[in-house]
Length: 143
Image (cartoon, rainbow, N blue to C red):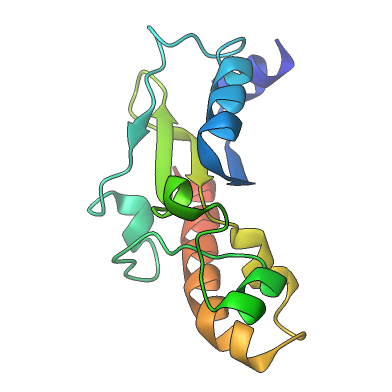
């Protein structure tokens, strides 16, 4: 009830760092307690959505993996073929305002948390992660 009230009053939530079908299904089952599917459909954010162009021009949803996995494998899909594609999905209110941003099969938080740990990791993920994050925050604050 509190989440629904917060979102109804203009709130915004960004959910990040959950990988694979099990985590997605679990998240959606919990989210539907506050935002019923019939009233609040989930949609893939198209790359022409204003959020992708608020300050930086984002042309893809980057897949950002954890530092240990990347430095040991050079890969980004933490759970193999099930998580090979990163998604940015959303839920809008009745006026079209994006109120829930869901970044699935990616971890933007790691692009901010790990910038001092490895120059290689930072170069691979930091700029893309910061650009996406700045856009998401500016969009949320202005819409």
